[in-house]
Amino acid sequence: MANLAEFLVDTAARQPGHPALRLGTAVTSYEELDEMSARAAALLRTEGVRPGDRVALMLPNVPEFVVLYYGALRTGAVVVPMNPLLKTRETEFHLTDSGAVLLFEWHEAPGEGLQGAAAAGVRHVAVAPDAFARLLARHEPLSEVAGTADDDVAVLLYTSGTTGRPKGAALTHAGLRHNTEVNVVHVQQITSDDVVVGCLPLFHIFGQICTLSAAVHGGASLTLIPRFDAQAVLTAIARDRATVFEGVPTMYAALLQQPTEADVSTLRMCISGGASLPVEVLHAFERRFGCMVLEGFGMSETSPVVTFNHPDRPRKAGSIGTPIKDVKVRLLDDEGREVALGEVGELAVRGPNVMQGYWNRPEETAAAIPDGWLRSGDLARQDEDGYLYIVDRKKDMIIRGGYNVYPREIEEVLHTHPAVALAAVVGVAHQDLGEEVAAAVVLRPGVPATPAELQQYVKDRVAAYKYPRAVWIVEGLPIGPSGKILKREISVPAG
Image 1 (cartoon, rainbow, N blue to C red):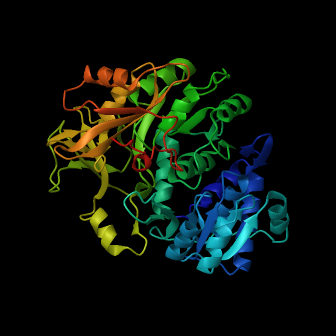
Image 2 (cartoon, rainbow, N blue to C red):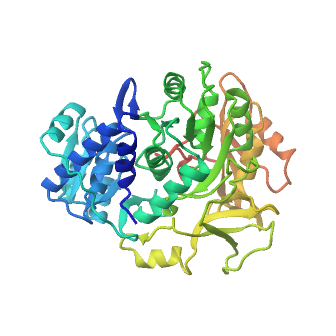
């Protein structure tokens, strides 16, 4: 199996002058990107980086991230992508846990990466566009690409750590190549005619493989947006005549709130992942922007795509579709037995996309993959056509007086109310019932609603034990680096 960086080398040879990256009005061709990544590989070799060494990137969605990403892979090094917003303590942990030998950080960062690198004893390089270009120019391109085995680690991606300290998912060249190839051929059907919007963070697996790697392998142009801004996305789609948009549910909700109309008629496909997309948001987006949204499911640990609403099959709104090529799924009960059709079980995954394991954590790897099947932590059901539906995160399920309440079901109802822009349903401790259902709601601008009105709206539409006994209106919900709502950080009002 070839190095993941071969995708760039092959595309550059096939279409050297074709635009690879766009950032505003600046354009980088595939030939230029290939040469810069080869110079970056030479720079890393000069710095003493050898195959298997970990190189950390703490950069936003800028061309320099892509250059260093492929430069590191060309040397056989392991890329450790890191959120540029990490604080000193978090940076030190990532660098120490991964054993990184070098950290590249964006020059506009407030210094947290520099301090974290110093604490971890890791060499730090500030990346400023002009200075970085001059640095690369001093190195002759290292044209050869290091050979890699199927199970060699290409990327060490740290999970969000919702249940403790982050864990590094060791993703192999083979797994990432497989997911990229399936994305290009069967899922997104990417060609050199496409322009992909790159607003998903490249330090996250969704943006890294489904936008960057897929665009490079398919020969498409990738429009980089350093940090998500709904109006900037609409402007970029119109300016660059974008054909593919990929985002998480909060991005779709934000785009719907933009009052300015933009010409998005060139869009042929919109993809949602990262979390469940409320069906009402999906339909509202399609009505307004005239482009079908296809939803899928993936995880950091699965490189990432597991299932998808394939474009050559019927789309089922609210479903995450069917497994992608060569990937198998099962729905299991707490004893590891498959549940009956239509019943809810934990989604388990097996295939070439599954991670090698958690970095230096054999016990946690064994717990996550006890029998060759990765336990996702997501509860799902399957219909008679084989389509899967995420019910909720296993840990998010609320048990109220012995009854299971799935927050997603209540959120779907709330999103059908005309005043609701975003909703998050959580469980709060209750002395008699164990847990009580509660909801935090963000309203649409200029559309009023009271907590009592929203509570009654849900009460009229679900069983009595399910509706939220507490509803509060908030200005916004806490959003993580990948665009997901962080339910653990929602402040519950006293009383």
